[in-house]
Image (cartoon, rainbow, N blue to C red):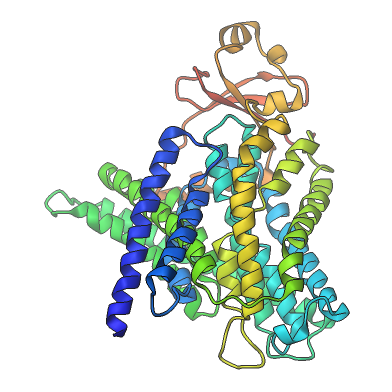
Length: 528
């Protein structure tokens, strides 16, 4: 009775999703910082998987790569681009790109090469891999280099931490997935070559650049076309059209998924195209929609991303109890140490480079926290089970690698995710803004500003000056927004120089000055 078995599986999964959402709500309401919603979803998934095995389901609930990449991941990626704080991203773009691009390369190479070394010395059995161990180890490293700090971001958003920490973690996470996916695909394009060696790495790098740039252009191009269409429609009278908001939302949602499909058909990365499509829609298309459509679109994307995110973590938990595991003890016991070591190489090397140009270097406690937020998630596991087998053309997945990757995902999500709060306190990052992190004060402000707002709870955020951002902003206001739509930029009041470090204040609220609980951005002038 295959149909009955399928109905049982769907019932288990649907009940699991409902319980997961209710549990996440209670966690947020009770502010249980030691148990992030993603960790609770995974634990519930493990419990549901154990119950389903006891209940005697006829087959295990297999994690489907097609369902993950075509149905569950797109809403999450689109929301990441759509909700991204573009000003904070561009202000820290140098550090974010360094961690997300160069750092991902470093993590992938360190993890992949170390795993291949274990194969050569016999700690990892060659028979537990497929026909191209070198390519498979590098592809495995590319997949595991994908971080997913959902649990960490949930805690960071719930407590007062230096804004630069949240901006770096969020910025790296939204780009890291895209870079890891493109790097993984670049590696697997050479999976059928048994003679693959170090001499082929330049070809992999070229393929990576082509995939990344091509996907970016497709995502931006399709999104701009949608923005132009919606701006034209907004110029007409839609008052007599029933449910006009539905059409406006459909242009954004369906246009975004079109960018994903076009990129996949063209042999590019749909995830990268979708991410940049979300950025463009939030910057242009969103402001051509009616106010009611804007509210509905924002809530719809948040809802879709949240539900898919919780479902993915619960589904990962199901795999722990229902999957037919294959163990290679070399892969199993070295995976977590290598994941931590590769992340440490990423943060350590990139931070040294970043600190050569920053007026205020990234402090050591901030670097340690960036190391600790390197949780692995669904993207890493989804890529691993999609790893092509060179010994069986057309087949994907190497069971021993899948089991090892699942262990890394579960341990980092449950362990490091739940440890985020205690680590913030241990490294003295909780309850601070950027000024407190660097030992700055209000002394450089005018007496009236310091006297009025110095103790009012205003939070200071430091920003690194960006020549590219200034150039693009001028181009955007002069040419792009008149053509594609967008918000008219309001003037922002600049505050006196702080003196220490040469930072200036920017009051983002419309009344020309900071109010209670306002975050005051401190922007470093260029040329320092």
